Amino acid sequence: MKTPKQRFREIARINQYAKGCLRDTADRDYVTSRVAYRCGFVQQFLYLAHQAVEKYLKAILLFNSHYAQFKKIPLIHDLNALYRRVKERSDLQVDFPEKVDKFIAFLNEVGISRYLDYPLRTYGDDMLTLDWTVWHLRRYCQCFDYPNKGKKEAAGLRQNALRRVRQEHWKDKPHKFKLHNGHLERILNNKRKTEEEGRRALVWKNPCYGARRKRTIKRYLYRISSTIPSHYTGDMESFRMISRKMSFPADVLKDVEKRGGRLFAGRVTKKQDETAIDLQHPA
Image (cartoon, rainbow, N blue to C red; front, top):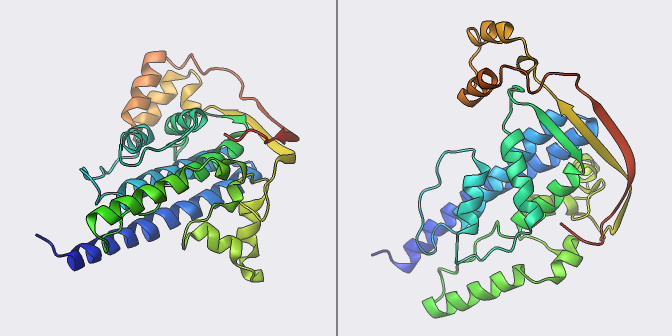
C-alpha cells in the first residue's frame, strides 16, 4: 500500500511527462500545422494536425491514468481508437461536439500519410475546424486529481474542476479559457520580439486563441484541394515495380491492388479562395 506521499510523487512524475512530452509537444505541432496551412502545404498540415491530436488524446488519458480503472496507453496512431477511449471515460464525461468527432475521423484517414501513401483532400475550412478541435481537447489535458487531499474532499474538488471545464460560457469566449502553465498560454503571454513569430502563427485567423474573441474572420483562407499519389493513378505495372523497391503500408498495397488503380485516376485539381467566415456558432 502506497503512502499519500509516495502516491503524490508518482502522480507528479506522470503529470510531468504528460505535460512536457505530450501536451507541450502537441501545442508545437498544432502551431506548426497552422504555418503549413498558410503556406499551402496540405500534406504537412494534415500530418502535423494528426500528430497534435494524437498527443492531446494521449495526454488526456495519461493525466487521468491514476483515477479509476486504467489500461496502459497502446503504442498506436489510431485516432479513432484513442478518441473512443477518452469518450468512454465515465469519470471525465467529456462534451465534444459532433464536428470534432467527424474531424478526428477525417484526420485518422488522411493525416497519417508521411510519404503521400494515401490520397489527400481538404474541404476549405480545415484549419478552422482544427482550431476548435484543439480547443475542445485541450480543456481536458490537465490533471483532475488531488492526491494531497482526503478521498471525499478530492472527489468534490475533481467534480468542481470538471464542471468548470464544461461551463457553456467558455464556448462563447474561448480565448478566456487558460490552462495552467500551458505552452500555448506562454506563447500568447510572451512579449519578446524573438518569440513574436510563434505568437503570430498561433493567433492568425484563429477563433479560439488570441487577445479577443473573433466572431467573424475576414478573408479567411479557404484551401480546397485533392492530391493523388502517383501509385493511385492507374498504372499498375509501375506500382508493382515501385512496391518491389519501396515498402508501402499493407492497407495501401491491398487497396491499390483491389481497385486496380482506377478509382482515383484523373487530373488533380486544386482551388483556393479567400472569403469571410461567420463564427457566431462555434464548432
